[in-house]
Length: 396
Image (cartoon, rainbow, N blue to C red; front, side, top):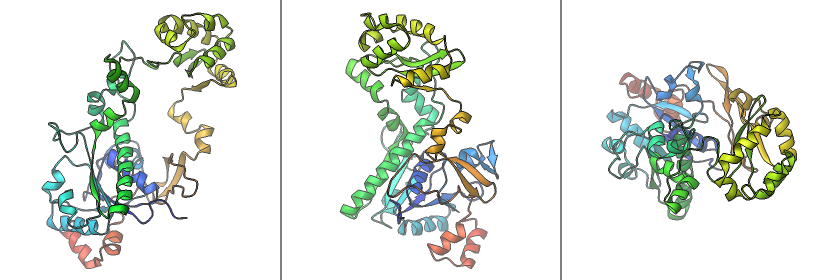
């Protein structure tokens, strides 16, 4: 079965998370991904542990399956020439060096498009290739703060809080993968590649979504609501006898059902709570009333009853519970892959479910330089003697 991106080759010169996650997504869809790393050390995340499996950090493993690894010293003339030769036989290049750094190495888009006019060149940086702060280093945590998401995350009276994973890096990788595929589609019409400029800050601002739109429409600065929703009530977590659960009442019909379910029909008739705008206005009165009801039964008890009424709800699970969840397992979101040093590694699966051309998990996250000889010989025609000399000179 031919995968959607089979036949496309991606040079992944990125490290950490945003770029590698983008390249892995393309690899899951069938692209051949060549991960280019620094000789000796490789991707920074290889050392970001514990935990480790077979000498590889769990952090590195999460974003690097379906790739082959080669090492190249980009600061050497021979290394630069090697990259140029790889570009000639590739479709996409992904990098996340500081703005202008690849150009200073004569490996920027303007230089490399001379080697391959069809190259799709994707640069991922903290602040983009333009603007007064384009030269600043960008890290997910810093961008979550500057981009506004921390100002709306956390308890109302608590400190601003980041999301528990590097969500800006992840979404930047997804935006980049989308843009790359759009550029490849455009290339089928024009024959020409192009440069893609992905900024973590741009990405963060883009997915402020309704929070950003609420401010732009009203001029009112959003605050923090903890697990509650600024525009929907009740839409938050509640404490039952033995833990917490999530409840989402999306419309007034569901609210009326909930009031019947909890044996409080008078709340549905109360003009303070009968409509969602009224509930939002009077949340400080309503939420304690609901909390007193939900404290009378267990999480399982409430989930069973609320689901039976057709109202959205769910448990708040720990990570171990997530990877034991029967729905998660049924959707193949936990996968086992053979690994050359760990024997087997468990990874999160892909959420992309294509009926005719499904994703495939072909290669485990590679060891540093594991495929150098294969790549230099198979793609570029280097002899064993030439590869040996490159190693002696510290080029690979």
